[in-house]
Image (tube, rainbow over all chains, first blue to last red; front, side, top):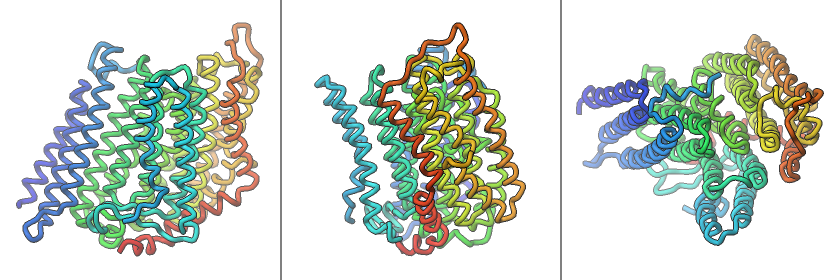
Length: 103
Length: 493
């Protein structure tokens, strides 16, 4: 397996995620975080597959990815709940409007 | 795989959730509050049981879960882990007792107590983790519970905004940490601390090790509010309910520091990270103190002061010696009590008067003498006045910096401590000054809240005058990290 393609894909996902975080829509920010998380998971999968011995990929990398998907799901749940509440208070999903707290 | 009885404390959040739901159905809210206090007391007892299981004699407890080390997860408990976990559960116990009185007007207390114990269990799990897998899971558990608790009062816009900011920054930090872990896994083929120490520690520096180093600094640094990554803290800590502020400032950010110390010492020789840590320490304490000067909100000022204290703790890490780390650990314990007292006492004022603005609180101190007394003691400790425990730990930190030749860092540390007196004195003068005509109504807080704050203030004074006991534990913890590193590795391999 060519590392350039795999790590390059992970890096591309990472860059798209960072780009999304720099935007102002709250849901887009949250999806950007998920994208970076998936880039990291992708890297894990690649390295686990690199360590394949006797036809099996390394189970440690795989199980870590499962657990990190679970925690990522929890973060999204909390994040979406916060966005819903923020929409109730500010009537917008634009993160730049949340500027009551400063300094 | 024999799990010690003491570790069943890890299930406390689930028990809290179930009992809380039952108590809600049976309409007996006091039962739920009592069970929450008992569960947090269970944590303290568990730490004492673990301490007596051979850790006091310098042994290391290894609990493998799901297979032997290069695969499965493991918990590895040495004196340093136990020191941090014990600080966490003691702070959490005091905070829970305080919440019994402070949160009595709030609803949704089942969620509150369950999340509170989830934070505590997350912190003990981070402290006990023996591999990066376990560390990450408990790290996220702590993080997700604290995002929810910061925005607990969701009917106001402030907590929602602060919680959203904290959630975004915290989860970006954890995700970057996950990236670093992926690279570590790619290099070493395992996530177990012992295997990592054998393969990566002492190896030649490559671009990959530098990338991993920076991801670790960013990942752990966001949660521990080290300066370029600190911007969430001054919003999140003031907007949380006061007991949660005390817990977040007192021990959650220090858990980030614990994880950073543990992983950095496992992966690298101290010579690599000494200078970066010294620079970060300087930036963190200076910026924290300077920004605290211009705050009118009491809790916001204390939040900036937490950033400054985190800078002092980094001084100990930058020395890379057992003595300096002893100062760091001592300051973690003392800071948990000092900032805990400060936040809880300010919480009492907020609870009784409904405002946290320093200018509006003029003269309130005379009506709330016990609360103001504990604020005074904690501020003296935070400024490092002799006779309080803050002096002991700052003395160790600054003298260790001079010992390794960072004289300038020690000088700036002392100057920063002097600067910090400016904003502490402003609060005390405002509280004790003459009340103006339109002063806010105030009366002394409920007895339970006074008891907790006075007890914590007493601890600050007692450990300032008789520091031997806590100093000896901190010495054991730092020796377990520096000199016991080979035993820590050998306990698994």
